Length: 128
Image (cartoon, rainbow, N blue to C red; front, side, top):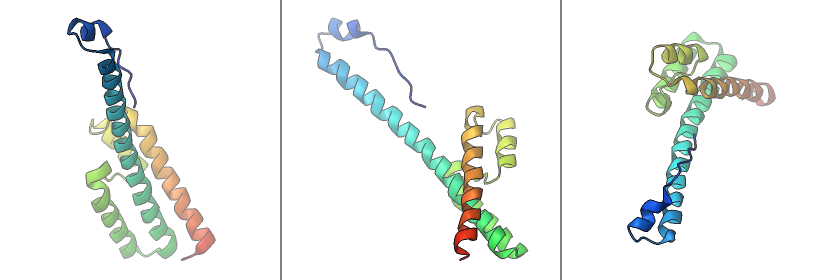
C-alpha cells in the first residue's frame, strides 16, 4: 500500500525554498504511507487473532454454547478494527456488497486461514 509520488522540484525553487524542503517533503510522504500500511496490518492481525480464538474454541470444546459465545466475542472485539468478518465467506460477501475493498480480499482470507491453522496447531501441540 506504499505509494510513490513524483514531486515537481521546480515548484520549490520558484518559491525560493531550499532543496532540503524537497527531502523533507519526501520523508513526510514516506512516513505517512508507512503508517497507513501499519493500519492495514492491524486489521489483518485482528482477523488473524479473532479467527485463531474462534477456531480454537471450536476444536477444543465442541460445545455449541461455547462456540456461539466465542463467535460473538470475536466479532465484538474485531468489529471496530477490521469489520469482524472472522470467516472467508463473510469477507467475500462483504466485498461483493461493496463494504470491503476488492484489493483487501486476499490479505483478509490469508489472515483468517492462517489464524485457523495456528489454532489447530496450538490444540494439537499443547491441548490446553
